[in-house]
Length: 380
Image (tube, rainbow, N blue to C red; front, side, top):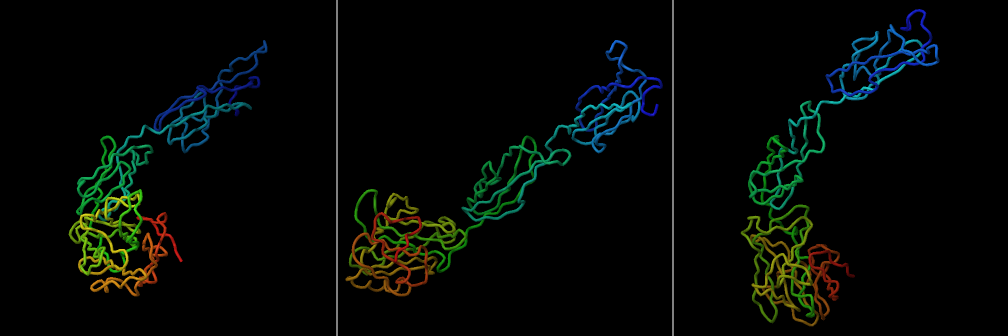
C-alpha cells in the first residue's frame, strides 16, 4: 500500500527504529533498520514483515539518507549537529537520534596580533594569540608559550604582555606543542625628553619634626603627560641648609637620552635625602650629595640638557630673600609662607602649574598629610 504496509495487514500498533541512538563523525555513515508491530491473537505484539518504510532526515544539511523507502536506510554525516532519522508506515512513526561529531581537531596554525608594535623602554604591549585546526576553525582552551627572541630588548610573560627593557627590536612568537606562530616584530625606543612644564616640582619638604618613620627632606617630581619621559641626567639645583649662596646640584643617573631613569605617565618620582621618607621608598637616594634643603629661604630648579623644566623659590615670613643666584630659580611671584614645622611645600590642587610659585604652592603644616609619591591634599 501507499503507506508502506502490505495489503491485508492489520493496523500497526508501533514502529521501532534500531539503533535508537548513534553517533558518527562528519564523513562517516550509519545504517538504520525499522520494525513494525501489530497485535497478535493472544493480545501481544508480533512483528509485521514486508513493510516498506518511508524514511527522512530532520536536517538534510547535517545528514542525508541513501534510501528513502524500504526496511532500512543509511545516514551519511555532512555537518556537526543532531539529526532525527525518521521511519513512517501506516499511521505510525518512529525515530532514532543521530549525533554527528566533527573530526578531532588538530592544531595547525597559531595567529598572533598585533604583528607589529612599538613601545618605549619601560612600556608594555599586550600580544594575543589564536589557535586554528585543520579546517581553519578556531580552537579554544589552548595554552600558549610566549617567547621574545631578544630579552635584552623586551621580555614577555606567559600572558603575552611584553615589557620594553632596552632599545632595539625583537621577535615575539607564541607556540603550543609543535606549532609556532609567525614572528611578530616589536621595536623598543627610548622615551622622549621632557620639555618645560612636562615634568614639574610637585612637592618639596624643607623642614620637619624628627619622628618615626624616618623623615628626610625630599623633592617630588610629577609627569604631567600621558607618556613615559626620560629624565636621565636631570640636574636638580638647590640652596642647601644654612646661610649660603653656593648652588648645590644633584644629578639623576644616566646620560641624557639614555633611558636610564624614567618617570611614568601621570606618575611621581621621589628624590630624597635618604633611602625612604615618611615610610615611602625613594626612587633616588640623594643623600650622597648632601640633599638638605634650606628650610626658610631657598630655591629648587630642575634642568635637563641645559633646559629649565620647572622651579620653586620660597621664603618663610621673617626670613631674608633667597640670594643670587637663587633669585632666578623660581617661576613667577615668590612663594611665602608662615613659619613652623613641617614646611611641606605642595602644589594645591595637586599638579597645578600656572608658572607662578605664589599661585601654585601652599604650605602643608601637618606631618600626617605629607604624601610623597601620591596626590597632595588640597589646601585653601
